[in-house]
Length: 485
Image (cartoon, rainbow, N blue to C red; front, side):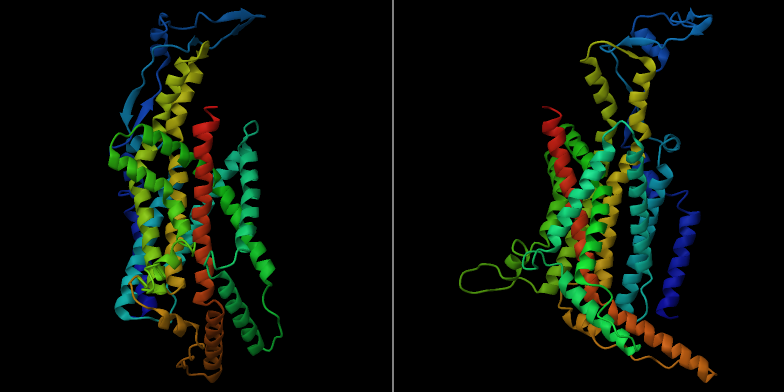
């Protein structure tokens, strides 16, 4: 069985798992319903009446009165400084059925797990059978994961645009323009400071495209200019930044709440590392800070490199995957910090004067739990994007998981197009057609080289981390200083 055959078998098996097993054994459901999360139940109207010192009435409320021949039902109000203590309940599978965006959350997490398993099996098969010129189908799975993550973030962002009175729409638009300007500034920075390889990759892409078109008898200066390429990237970056605005702001608030509610030193340290993980990813591509010091450390007169460039690229991939794993581990602390907002809002209400209707109080408490999956998506989706852009960077960029020099493999993939093998066919015409298609696909493969994918995916991975850290840093400043002021 060939490589494609094995990959198709793995894909079919995983599709069956998604359809038959995931509904019963779901990692997404387990993350919420493993017994470690608890939510606050809103008090009933009878409980609030009792606490407010009122009698529990049957039938019409005493607040009902006639107005122009009609009965007007005024809402029952209670003092804000009421002695209210919310009851807690462990999150169960039945509770999750009422959560907003639970199907989207479950699908994204479970499909990500399935895609990751397919990727690992495919990588293991490729490492055992050796390199092959056939398409790696795990790339399709990774791209589907990225598409689902972007779709979910887009759906969440559109809800903020539908809010009329709030300032969420203005925040998204402002950050979108900010990230557009930031992307344009980053794209003109020389690669002596940010070594994505975009310039080299685009040059290789343009030259290969011109050669391919010339072989087809077409005259061309290239598929697009460098300015158009960078402008397209800047627009894409502004959209990604707008989608990651509220996930970053929410992460900052959950981080502060989790720190205030945690007493263990190790947990607090891990929370700090988790919050700073996007910054650590950003620094991995800042050449004077990381790569120059590792490849050419200042050890006196002698220059002893700690590792090769390919080894450094591999270590960078492992660091990103490790930080994504840490973010998954710390997910429980952040979600619980969000659920505790219900009691926090009640405690804040007690410090205020006046009265509040029972319905508003119940909505204030219940709303926190009902939007749990929205918060979980805002926490998980950026992590999923970082993880699978890294996996794509490894595969399409022809990196290696081992610490050894793989430059020869990259040069081999940048070489001439693979010779088209003769396809056994009884008819010469069909044989010529198949050969022509094979040569065309080989030519396309020479256009989209590992150099291009290395530059493009390195930049996108770096950009996602930079956007997430920028928005979370602003959220930290906003929640810790502006709100207090």
